[in-house]
Image (tube, rainbow over all chains, first blue to last red; front, side, top):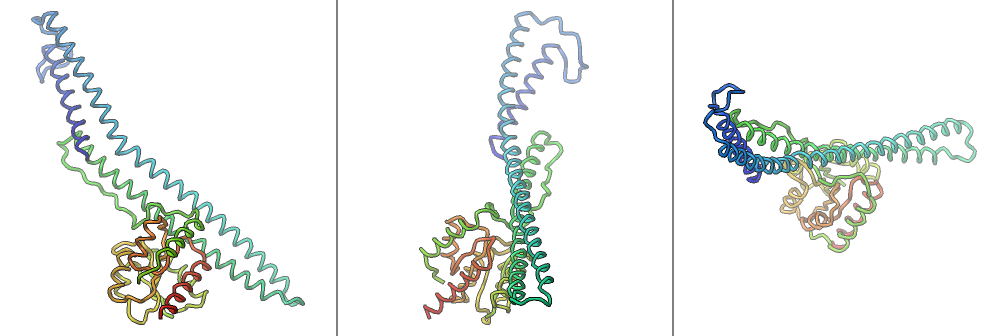
Length: 221
Length: 123
C-alpha cells in the first residue's frame, strides 16, 4: 500500500469526521443524541451561514480525497483485472489453436491409416513404408502441439500472480477502512514459475532473434 | 550420448525426451528444476537441455552453477523467453545455444548439431 493511499484515506476519513462534527454542532446533537433532534435555539443566522460554508468546504475537500481514493482503487484493482483478462484471452486463443492443430493432425493420421488399410495386400508401388513414415511424422507433430500446455500454464501462473498481488493490496485497503478488524491476510498462492511474455505466437520470428544473438555472441562455456 | 533434461513441466520433459529419441538420442536423465538437476548431474552426462523459468532454481542460476563444476558440458536453453536481453543474459551465463518454445524437432536437432559441431571444432 503506497503512502499516497494512506494519505488519501486518512484525509477522507478526517474530512468526513469534521463534516459530521459540524453538522452535529449545527443541530445541537451530542455524539449520543438521537437523529432528527430539534435544532438548538441559540444558533444565529450568521453563525449558521458560517457553519454551512464550513461544511461545504469540508465536503468539497472530501470529494477531492474520495477522487484520489478512487484513483488508488483503480490502480489496485482495475489495471490488474485487465492484465488478468488479457492473459485469460491468450490462454483461450492458445488452446483453440492447439486443439485445432491437434484435431487436424488426427484427421490426417486417420486418413493415412485408411490408406494403409487400402494398400494392404495390393501395393504394387510399395507405398506403404512411405505412408507409415508420414504417419509417424504426423503423430509426432501432434505430440509437439502439446507444448501449448506448458505455455498456457505459464500464462495462468502470471494471471494468478497478478490476482495474488491484487488480493494483498485490497486486504490492506480494507484494513485502512476498518482498522478495528485487525490485519487481514492474503491467501492466494502463485501457481508456479512463469515468463511474463510466454506465448505460442510468432515462434519463427522469436527463434530468429535467438539465432541472431547466438551468432553475434558465441558462447563462452 | 547421455542427456540431462531439465524442465518443471512434466509435459515438456516428455516432449523433449521423445524428440531426442526420435533424432537418435535415447539416454536421458530428467529433473524438475535447477536444484534437482545439479544433484543429478554427473560426469557421464554429455549434454544438458534446460528450461529457464523453474521454481527453486532457475535455468540461468543452474547454468551458472553448472559452469563452476562442468565448464565444457554443452548446454542448450529451451524456453519461452525470447526478449533479446534475456537471450544475451543466457549466453553470458554460459549456454551454448538457444531454442524458443514452442519448438519443432527440426530446430531442436539443428541446435544440438550446431553445439556438437562447435565443440568438435574447438577440440
